[in-house]
Image (cartoon, rainbow, N blue to C red; front, side, top):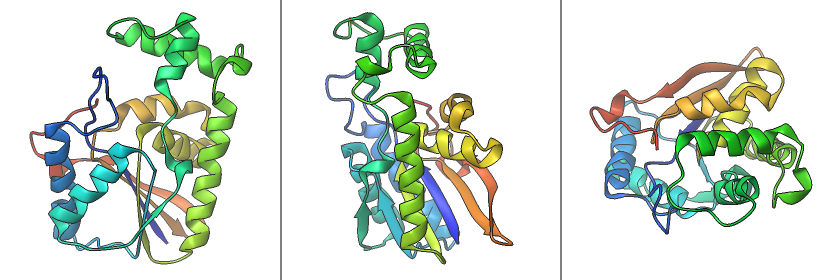
Length: 210
């Protein structure tokens, strides 16, 4: 089995409706599709989170690659609710533009476990949800090639769990993931192996992290 984890293309960070792709995001998603087709990486199964940015990225991939494939939607591959994480940290609705320090402090508080009862989804629940989504995906296609369109958080959690046995080291991996990048997992001798992380040469100059 080969598992290709694709981070969604650029969404609309800071906008009222973050979940929609930006104009550049639509370009990135098509470039990802073109790159997959050029490398003859047509999947046997496509799995996507249920967010708008996931669905729009899938559409762009299919347009760029010239594919018309069925898509299995699995909410387990969705990103954590960053708005809720920030609101709990600030003890109220998000105020203005969120800078990196506020965002990182909010995530650190979320992951610390000190306020789990205040979140719509605690960090342990998020990590368990992603692990369960991985198990379901592998069960759907125990062989062949699977493309999963998801977000940086689930990719970071999955790779951290694979490399260390724990999702705790997810954040640096998640933050390194370029929009519309590819991370490749495979099985060797029955064991999961990380073959590549954050591939994005297909994007050329259209590289963004957020």
